[in-house]
Image (cartoon, rainbow, N blue to C red; front, side):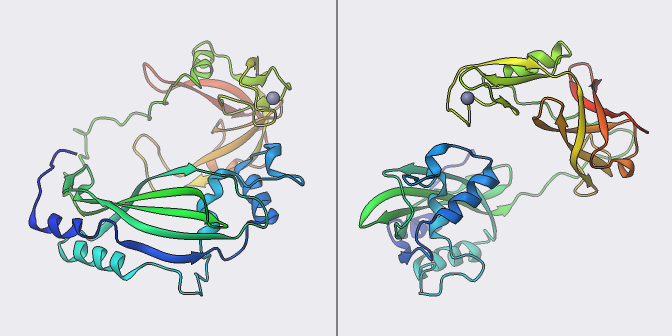
Length: 311
Ligand code: ZN
């Protein structure tokens, strides 16, 4: 983002700050155990705080209690006319594309099964005109306050960019185009040990030293007992294809579709996403035995992949 200049349109857009984006909303269902259970299963979150007689809802479910589902809200809850007007002004100014950029949540108190949720949303801010890689436009931030029994449970800030797409330079093709390289892994302090292992041709699985649970991918703490302490075990390298998809579209540089992306269950019991080598994409099958190997893609990237044991 480079530009930051006020203009006539921006002065008009700013007058929407503080106006409602949605008012008087009521959750379609009270906070309830079945939705919590489905959420936890989908997220793979086994935290014991979310089950049992004293269960609380996962805090990150905050927004889900406000959503109208496929049929939408039928009690008039919805976008305000002010918000529609603001988006209309941006459309008319040529900023017709939209992308959700980020959301932030703050939690004030836990929600429990039986709580009824009410919510209001306000247009919190409209940015000056900004130029991003996507194009030029304005960021619009809305803040939703979620309450139960009149008490604030949390806030949900949601930011979009309404923009006019930048014209993209033509994609280079042909013999002059540089060969695309595989994306680099993002190595941080939470997963560095894994990549150090890969460099030594060892596939390391994290093991909680509190409860002994193995986990993959690497995480800062244990989902079972919340302990931050861990050591590692080295995978023996054998596994089976637990599931897979075949990628046809969209194309990504450095990948040559169609190709199979597999969820491999290691002999130790954890699962990881990887490539299957040694067989064509249409010969990959659920239950197929596979064996770990390390495949070098370029001078700095080597990745664990799995070779099909039966061709
Ligand atoms: Zn543990």
